[in-house]
Length: 476
Image 1 (cartoon, rainbow, N blue to C red):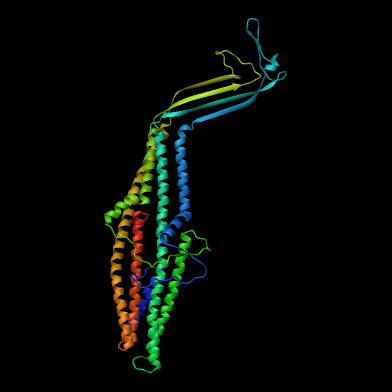
Image 2 (image 1 turned 60 degrees about the vertical axis):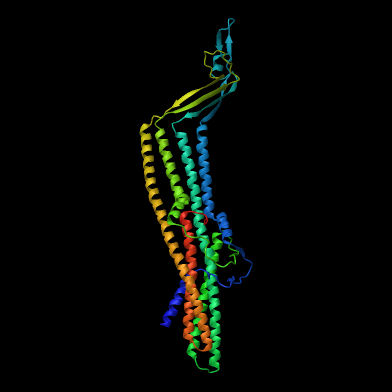
């Protein structure tokens, strides 16, 4: 039965170290010190790590770039109505042309002297002809086409910004877990060191009594203690491995270079300073703050604006339109007659109300049906996703409740285990207790201590996951 207890304790130790699922000793007399490492490591607390990760994470940079692209699309939607102007410039060559009149002013001949010149086949000079045209219009009323496009682009920006927050909240959760993982490993190492002190005292005591050939202990008792000491050494190696992995995760998440040495602060792992609120409070916060919910809402609003744009497609656009044109050929005489069209030298302009309607009603109806179907699908997806996210909040809340209760129980259990171990050590010195009693006490002390570490870690991570589920950046 005692061997069974030892095996159970060993399994608890493996689970705690490998999964980083324990937390530090609460109310301990000593602060666990970081193991000595070569080189100088930059120590950061949790807020500094979070801020650094937000600035350096490639995923966040990519999401911010997508926000910039969405803002550029919004600028396009704003300027598009006022970008319906165009210019054309045409340049060619023409033969010289002159107006010849008689004494009464009647036109007799229009050429450079003979017909060949007029046709540009020879005899006369060749000169340039430049024609410039400007035309366009400013929308006055479009039945919602312009406002719909702008609204859709604005909602697109909102959706992209919500995605940035989603990535940041995921990153923050991972950073918190890695930060607590480092402290967890050091708490485990500290607990092992604390227990090793009791174990070494017992080994010395038993060895002295055996050397003096005093009654009460046998070589088997000494072997049991040495075997347990070897198991503790193995657990210590696991703890150091867990610490190294957690530090690597911190360097990766915070954007550190491979050669950069980062470390966490020396403060002991403690319970996060937050109290559980009601489930309704967290659900309400999630409905306001969860970036996924706001992103889905923005996408739905964008599709709604698209439907409004398609509906407006059946109605005409009213524009204030105008045009301006200038044609100039220096080797061609200008005809100063308002009733004659002069293709070589002329100026014209005009402005007025333009009513424009594209007569593709079949395509308009198909586009409208498509937009309405997309909106209906998005609304259904949004409802399902929101229900799933609120379920995630409820599950995270239940996990936090359970972790809170387990934390209180394990804290009390560790106090009892520590008292038990102290009593056995005193009894061992007096010859009242056996090494089996000490081994049992040590095993239970380690098991319950690690269970308390696990309870603190579980509570912290469950509160972090609840924070992530509600979409809040930090505890309020």
